[in-house]
Structure formats: structure tokens, C-alpha cells
Length: 119
Image (cartoon, rainbow, N blue to C red; front, side):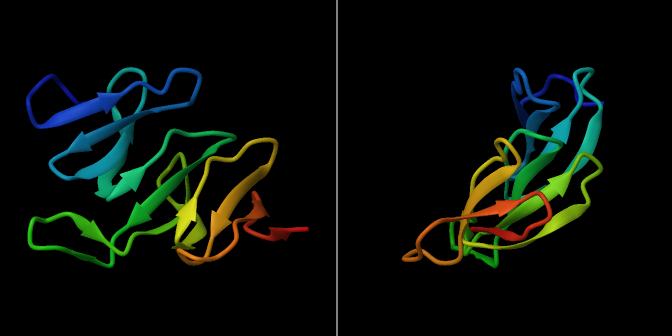
């Protein structure tokens, strides 16, 4: 269970299923009792929407320790990657679809909950 100390920050999930927790420089998720449900292993995590969350891992880190080359995908509430971390950017799901991009100059497109491109 996560307890108050200076090593972490919890973001309130509001209407979402879990709260984001930052321990050190890594993000994870905790339930409403503060129990860690996804260990802090990601460089970025958003709140759950429609049962999954955006998550990202960096390809490297700069001299200051900041993440570089983040790749985004989606995880379920057990921390399992359900849509591969291959995107340059990703948004939360809404009505069964999410916007993603493949590169910094690419046009965003929609995917469904299975990771399939939506026309």
C-alpha cells in the first residue's frame, strides 16, 4: 500500500477506475485504498477509461534523467499491455475509440479497443 511520504505523488482519477502514482521517476496505478495495482514501471500513464489506460516507456533518457523517445500504447487494469507501445502519441479511449499517431509529423488516426485502425 502507498502511504504518505515525499517519494510519490498521487493524481486523483475522479470518475476513472484508478489513481496514477509517481514513485521516484516512474508511474503506476493504485486503487482507491492506495493499494498498488500496477507497479510504477512506466514513464507515463494516464487514468483508465473504458477499462484500459494509456502507458508509455522511453527508449532512452537524457543527461538529466528525463525520458526521451516515448512510445505509447495501452494497458489493462492488471498492467498487461493490450495494445502495443508503438505510437508516438495516444489519447484515452472514448466511445470505444482512441486517437493515436505514429510519428511527430503524422496525422492522428482512430483505433478501436483491439488496436485496429478505424475508418
